[in-house]
Length: 115
Image (cartoon, rainbow, N blue to C red; front, side, top):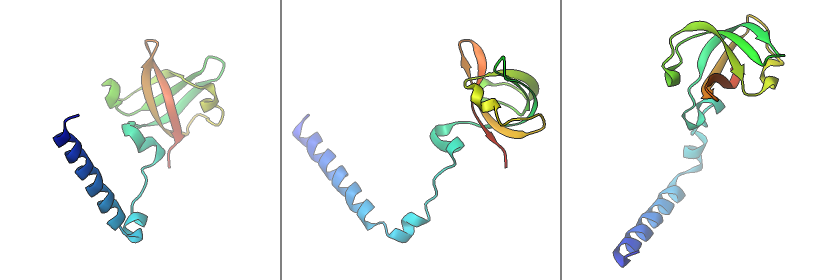
């Protein structure tokens, strides 16, 4: 690394440390952690459980638009990445879920009950 680049890096690191040290405890307490579903940019979609087939690892959801798959709102069945997700579900439950294409199939990778 060139000496000038090293100096710039050190100055930036030092100024960041000073800025963090100046943040008061009150400032930090007002900061809110994002909900687990909002962390790392995971897009969650609202849905209503229509049917569950634990033996096949399948859940049928009436869902809203799924932006990360460019899928419009509809009712369809999804595989689930972990069959344990189905344990507490029953038809009519409102959920929020995230789906990814796994092995060529739309698969629910995260699911939580909606509030």
